[in-house]
Image (cartoon, rainbow, N blue to C red):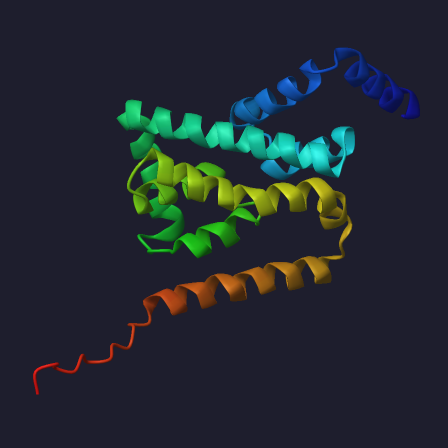
Length: 190
């Protein structure tokens, strides 16, 4: 096993600048290969370290979000498929941008489904990319740096972590549903 690991590290060293490019492109191919986001980010942390692996994962996931936006807008049938999945999973539930950010931290939630939510909540490509990148940073760093810890947690700790994220998710939803208290304006001409 150590020989394989050493061979892989030597290969990465020999490829130089091409290794990060291949890793970033792996994020684009990830959905076609049915690889979970957490697995690819963990590989980035393992092979490139926390800082570089996080940067490469953020770049790859951002590029994938941009490509998804373009594909969805050029292929309506694909958009309809994702919309049907959204309806099946969330049953027409409205969620907030904050809730999308929390859901991005859960490794088993469909990445493109959340991207569709962001597309529907934003006005244009620029705004979509801003929120998409903001929603990618924390999970990319978390999965890259601490992904191996998430896999080694006991079931009890895993349930506790998922429960905590669920509480935050529902709190953000309730907070968005509360109507703002408006203070009536006093007339200046009294």
